[in-house]
Length: 157
Image (tube, rainbow, N blue to C red; front, side, top):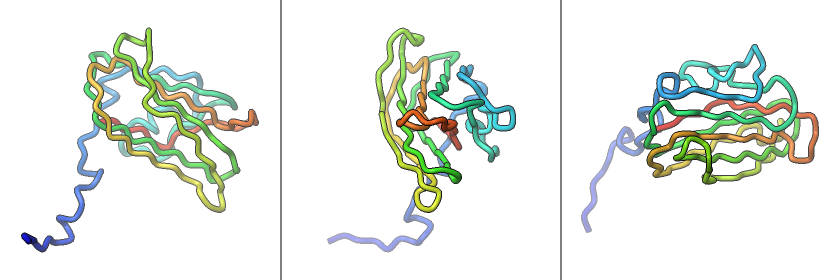
């Protein structure tokens, strides 16, 4: 049997080593609404901490329209809810034809509980070519309550 001892530094190649795409330079953003204190840039750009928040309750859409088609290998989504219990659903989908048709990447629900599970981070490894539009649809409360959607972070590679 062959084996080798590795140092703790060699154990992980971390997500922080990842070269994230410069979304600001590569895409236009369309959103259904935003709270002026929590603009979409706060979720899309590195070094921001407040994240994005919708201006009001209900279903919200964040759409990245790429100037040139992109190869995507990774999508990192992070949500944070520290105030109320709620069940959120989101759909992440992509288009190669400028948004005429979409293919779903994932549809997922998450139960937030300020006393327990107050954050959700999903790291999707994908292999998508010629992406022209990436769309995130968030339903902040699937029971139809008056909750406001938020997104702590969205990163692409």
